[in-house]
Length: 490
Length: 85
Ligand SMILES: Cc1cc2nc3c(=O)[nH]c(=O)nc-3n(C[C@H](O)[C@H](O)[C@H](O)COP(=O)(O)OP(=O)(O)OC[C@H]3O[C@@H](n4cnc5c(N)ncnc54)[C@H](O)[C@@H]3O)c2cc1C
Image 1 (tube, helix red, strand yellow):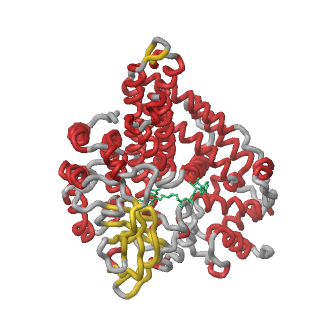
Image 2 (tube, helix red, strand yellow):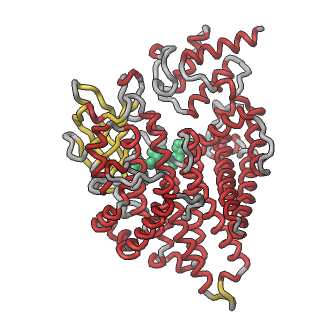
Image 3 (cartoon, protein in one colour):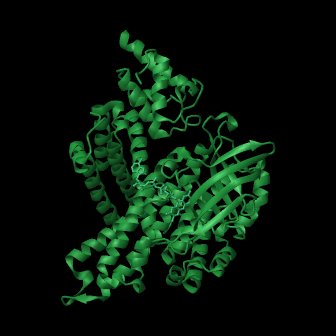
């Protein structure tokens, strides 16, 4: 992922990226990691020695103090070599440490940041529970005050890096704490804390080398100083932490897609059928062009997202990036398998593993369907209060029309129609990606990039048109499921 | 259960349909998000239910500054007064 705005830090990141690339080519074998379902310790130690675990941590604690954008470029590089490694590092830099960096006290920083920056300790993050996945308001893991301690009880699921993490940022329910009746807070947990245990590794479809475990808290006593940030302010902090996490995860999707794209281009040039290379066949040419364009837009949207300074803007951009990049990576990997033919289905080729690896990116850090409803809500609120804008591109105007028609037809009732919000979210993600791709191409004025941007704009138009077509008839949906159509709203 | 008649109680009754909190535990000073666990989607859903229940012509732009139960009740009262005028 090439930086599109070059500044004094770009060179530093370029140099580190190059070191990481060489290290990965030498030491990281994705097929071995997949087969053994673990990342060798030497790989994590080697990356630690290169400073990868400290890139976004403050310089005062041994980190490099680099920005989100810089970290994205590194995670992208890692994902070109191995997605399990990229996810483990990306989680550490985003969800794992962002809360501590932003909301931690000086004492908390001193205690953990140096180890986290060197990679001696790797960070994990946990919100999901057996009964609380998409609906985070229903957390059951509870922390209650007991003098100078918090006593935590409950169970957590699917914690990335859980098997080897040295620090866990955990979301817990804290009724009444900090004055918030149904409040949630964040606590910092060490693996050796009494009453805390890490469960067995899960067996997964992809990202097999990454660690995914449950956590159990049984009367776990944590000193009160383990509270991170303001008590009862969990959701606010989570919103910021998740923005970072989703952006970094999207960068990993770009790396996975880039690997598939490179492999597919090489294969299509070298493989001959019907007396010509595959790459000379009309249908294949179009596929390759669309893969390039989609990947270009994914990168552009990640870079544009990572540069957002305002928390609210970062949150909305990261929703779009997460959905667009996870879907894009899945699509590119699937096309890569297809264009490799039978070879694509064979594990040794490599693209099949990416298809397995990226599948979960549409689920974790917020299932895409849930995030699209949030994105639709955010966009509708914004566009309805701004009204129709002048001198925007055609595709932006089409999205304005769609949003404003939803508002004028349904008024506030639209917020009780998740399928409409979801459709608007889907169109919005494409339009934001198209905007980012166009801006990126205009910076370079490179003819290939201008063509990528145009292709993405055409697809964004189609996405808005698709989203604006009437929803599947509710009566049919209910009939298909054999349900009575009760409580249906107009 | 039938919806109660007075405005405060009716708003609180509607809120209690969206969050797992009993009407008697919902207080005007509570924040929809931090105290009642709503998010951007469910808080807009609530305002939408209110607009329909009270038959008010509220627009998206009118609800930007509504964060607490008390402000929600106030918004309904203002729009009821506008409707009556
Ligand atoms: C490999 C892996 C690593 C993970 N790492 C972490 C981690 O480090 N930390 C952590 O806290 N969690 C982690 N997770 C958990 C992950 O974030 C959750 O699985 C995810 O948020 C979805 O929650 P759920 O599994 O409970 O699915 P559910 O909430 O049960 O949803 C299932 C499906 O239902 C649909 N759905 C649900 N609600 C809605 C809605 N409102 N509108 C439309 N559709 C809806 C969606 O299609 C969704 O995919 C990880 C998961 C995996 C598989």
